[in-house]
Image (cartoon, rainbow over all chains, first blue to last red; front, side, top):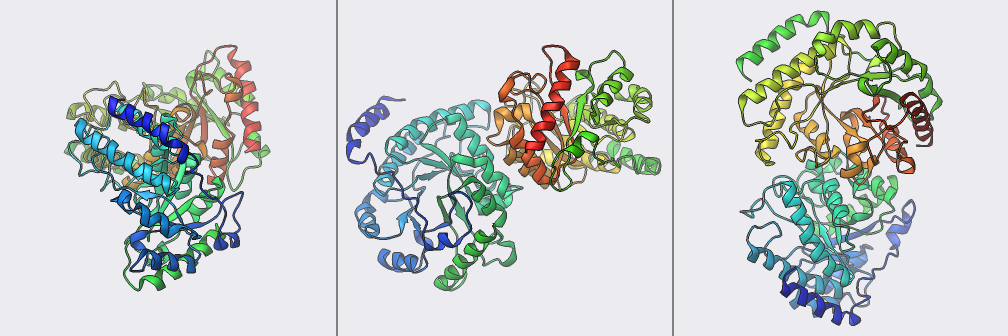
Length: 305
Length: 305
């Protein structure tokens, strides 16, 4: 750990009295979840990324969500600190909570250039602080996109290095009562981390309360042979889920019969998963209608699982 | 495909009339399997590697296996062609079948040197032919051990190359009614392929009846966060399983309570797995006694799963 980061940590720890409980997240089920036949404590908590949600203002977006019993909103990490007052005010006294923060950081962990890594740490720390104030479950991160070059090669040494770096940033996230959430992407976007079981094994090796992982049904379509197997491998490290239609990355259901999530949902129920399933996708038609139909379809598939 | 290999394939296809059904493997359950509460068609078929089995002669080894209701023997691929008459004669009229063939090839797939790869292809083809005559389910292979250097780096291009090579050797294996079985090892032995879900995704991408994968509880202890998740990800590609105690790679049970396979067995039952679970391990005490106790313990754990 370099001195800047250690100092940041100390300052952070000192300032934590005010935010110590910020990461405490409600796990109560919404109306739509109660309808499902969830095993254990599992419940379907749907979230939408902010940009997926129809509405010209945040208020309109939240009104739309509440009208469908949607439980969470996932903002981007981009400019999150600036937007913090607006976002905090918007979700106050709402049933919709901030589920997670999607990326928004600069730089990347697996850069051989210290300044790129420093950029990642500084920008991610800033997002973590905001995520904590918003009581989000975590900040979605990617160790290296294919396009981020040069990057360290895929070797045992790089994996060890990644885990050390994650332990540092995870320690900060945990102090703030939130987490960094490793997202495996498909090989076309990030060959370094493609599978949920690999992300989970990184979490296990990091052995840090602030380091968690997720699965995205879109990427899983190409990289996983079993949605259920992938989620069971994620186990208690599973902190978030993304969802999209399985052919064209649109609203779930837009691709018809291939948009089958029952096997994955069964795995989530076996885990007692009670965190969010968040839409990260485009839309080819009338957004409010398609999302309403989609939520209904997911509720049906959850009930079947 | 080079000309030698194409010629080999043509010759092989021509000679296949005699061996076309060689790969048809009995899936009947042994006595011990019938005792279990296997879901679907799943049944516990225990196999021992030949070198694990007590006895000075093959006959003694097979007598020992039959006395415990053990279903399979797994010989090494080393010198398999020479040993073929002996092995064929030994298993004739026995309840014990040849489960799979463990490695024994020379060279390796991910070598940048064509002569190393040619060595792999020629030696593996020879083992495949013998495996077919022994009606084994497949030949266990590893794309690259850490010690095999230089090897292609872990990149998208190498993965594509691996899949092309597997399609070639898999085509031959399938013609002979058997398979090559990718074995993920722990990172200390083979960083390139460490997880069952990754092996399964390689099988899916290869899309070839002769390319299959396996899980080894020993390696899985270090690389998987969930035995069940790993096996569910393997799904129909799962062709073989290795087992050992989970701390010291001895006879299952020798490490006491940590030798818990129930979660993995539950996954195997969910798959309807009816292939072999084969001991690949050392032994720290009286081999016949420890193996007998171990088989009993696995039967109990299978029943619990």
